[in-house]
Amino acid sequence: MSEAVTFIGLGVMGYPMAGHLAAAGCRVRVFNRSGNRASQWAGEHDGQAAATIAEAVAEADFIMTCVGADPDLRQIYLGEDGIIANARPGAVLVDHTTASATVAEELALEARKHSMSFIDAPVSGGQQGAENGKLTVMCGGDPEAFAAAEPLINHYARSVKLMGPVGAGQRTKMVNQIAIAGLLQGLSEAIHFAERSGLDVAAVLEVISKGAAQSWQMENRGDTMIAGEYNHGFAVNWMRKDLDICLDEARKSGASIPVAALVDQFYSDVQAMGGGRWDTSSLLERLRKLRGN
Image (cartoon, rainbow, N blue to C red):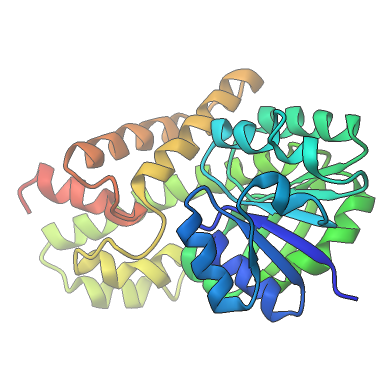
């Protein structure tokens, strides 16, 4: 018999992720704070939409969540109406939200009190990765619980890895976001420099992408950045949320991340330009506006 899976949070990521589980033959029940979204998903995927969290999780073997931030997680996991109070003992809870390691550790502790397992499992790959089932998933948790959940996660991932105990997944995602912030600022400055120098920017990127400067961002965002198109992925508003988590964790650990802190300020400038919903490659537009290009 296929596993009974509940998926909570049907945003641009969760909606297709839950769809991959249904396509793989899992018995999927969904819940979303906007009920119409859950009903739409159930109609498209021959699944079930629950009216409450308690109804959604009562019979689930695995409960996947993908919401906005720490406060959202506390709201759906804790309290009399939350996941932990209403799921059955032995359930495996897998959270795909990008959040703080602190909240992951907090929820894991509460889950253990109720004989449940918790895995923090933030993802990278954006909406396109979710839709194509090619996300990278970095996990923190108990190896036994991870081994049980991994086959399900593989339905929407191309790479899944246990990074350590609870919290390690979120800290690995922070590393990912720190690296991306620096890469995008560097790529934005490179394109801006090429533009101001009168070069054929597309030709420049074609050449340097064959050498040491090559990156995923260059290969997948270079052309759209040149065109000034910024509707191709993860939004600036969400990146600022993530970088805030990174900066807070860095203060706790004593890590020095000055480039990430500077790029966070640059994203604040993009927000002030009205670009909060632009994708993260819009750092280039900030440079263009500053120089009137």
